[in-house]
Length: 302
Image (cartoon, rainbow, N blue to C red; front, side, top):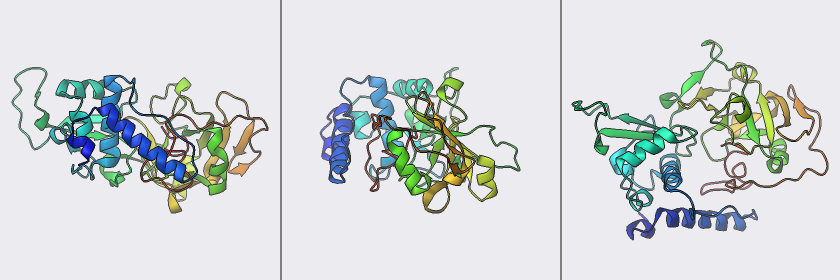
């Protein structure tokens, strides 16, 4: 446990300190500085960010055990420094899990606990519950243990699967031969854009839409999964790369850049004069590799 966790400082300070450390590492690699820490953010956002950071990336360092499905004991989670410093209650956790726009978390009763229902609300004791992040892990968890497999045989291949990314990352994507997991377990995709009703799997400010031929990739041995909150996930192929040969179509989302790729063939590069910016929150985090974890989270993954 870090000194920051021991001295009871605020969750915003924890987040700011970790972001500052990440920015320092990024500058050492020649990357651009990223967004700052938790100052000015709502309590709910701070709780959600702390939960994500712990359950996706830092559980082992915090001494918190995840089971095969990625669940941790809620009582132990609530003792973690950034959450403890916010005096997080069981009610706070329930509210964040229920209200999170992208449904990033699952909260459930511990199956080993027998709870006598005393009311319609069930148990309110944190030790009776388990919690997990639904996707986005860098902690290694067996995909089949907590995700629904997408297969041709099951007939559950979505008619449309897209990945959102940014102009700033596109040259690196092409150079690397496709989309990469970039330090996490999966490449994240969705069944449409936010305008088409997709809630999770793509950031709202994505600039490029990569439509993926999932069925073709499945026939070539690529595995696909669906998380509890509907995000489509793949580990890619060799080296964690989902090859450009599975790019059905690449187009601009709000700016017309023409068709860059179609049916696995490159048709054009980005037009001259396109302004490429690294979006907020896309700088590399701890554990990222040279070249930027997709600009931080998988070249456009949410």
